[in-house]
Image (cartoon, rainbow, N blue to C red; front, side, top):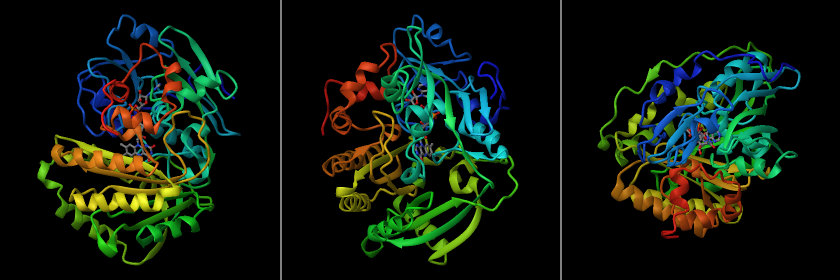
Length: 466
Ligand SMILES: Cc1cc2nc3c(=O)[nH]c(=O)nc-3n(C[C@H](O)[C@H](O)[C@H](O)COP(=O)(O)OP(=O)(O)OC[C@H]3O[C@@H](n4cnc5c(N)ncnc54)[C@H](O)[C@@H]3O)c2cc1C
């Protein structure tokens, strides 16, 4: 195994493909993916693992570690504060080719890890819907992927990491060493300190290909039947049409796949070439244009069931093919709603929420349904729990979309579920504290110099409605 002190591999500017570096490097405002809210903040790049206390020394308005800003809301924002950005600290430090155990600095992106790992026959243990997120950001939100029912969250595959606190304390955190800080930091929204480097257990693959099947379904019951039948398939996720009602309510395409077992060449991915050219005007995405797109998307798959061998890029990261696709939502930006409803009320709760969305006349064409499994997360504040998760993007139309989000958050609470902080820009303090009652205990591990606009909102004393 190579030494942890000497970089093994300094990735070429793989982030440049996402446009992310150009967007953020020292150029405020730092935007989250939803581009709402927008706050002024100072952005300071972090170059070296021990620099965190130094770069925030004398900062009185609070500091926050950030990665690539791929969270949708305000967990990666700090109004009038200092954002310490890690993307300049992205060296790969060690790799054991026999076991797939990798050690890297926290600002490395999953895209950079894939460029290194895939040609060597390894893949990420858990992957979100974009590869342009950092290792540190993936741990801090304890992200989940299409294999949650089998692999659990990202944190399940991070045996240890280093945490640097604002007072200069450095600690290695694992289930054995500093286990409380390990649990608080996985899903800890960046609030416990700066993760400087981490180990990640990769999984072996023999091909870039995925054995894919797409299956049409109509309604939650058919979705649940397919979920039951695919328990042993590694990746499952569904696109759902949230504009249709009546007998078409919750029609969609159930997508499932496994890594191909047939050995085939493993190479580096080509960089995407398309970028969303303009900000669309606010009226471009309306219920009629989105309903037409959804009907087209559902019927584009002419047969009820299709099977094919597909490269992992379009299977895992179809949206990454177009840089800055969030500009499609115009200057006002977008809100994402993502909840999970536990199995006890998952069917009725998800159906009631889909009906509420259809009734509102607000259209989402990126709506995703997925069943979470019961692999426990090591993170104390992690979002996933067994049940159904529903994620939907909406253009921001303050008078309508905010009211809808407030109703959906209330319904989620009534059905015993919770919302995902990484996607949130709206939940009230009362709602957050009901969704995450462990927040009081978590507070003990928070670094006193670190905060975020999300944290200020969800711990604000005026509470807001449930
Ligand atoms: C198209 C798209 C698809 C997505 N799909 C999924 C999905 O399938 N599943 C899922 O779970 N999420 C998904 N996400 C959300 C995304 O994976 C998370 O928000 C992720 O945490 C973003 O990582 P980042 O590097 O951009 O971090 P940022 O958004 O910059 O920051 C996220 C959080 O991490 C903290 N943080 C960042 N770096 C560090 C560090 N070094 N030390 C301590 N704290 C740190 C920040 O303070 C903040 O709280 C998706 C996002 C997009 C845009």
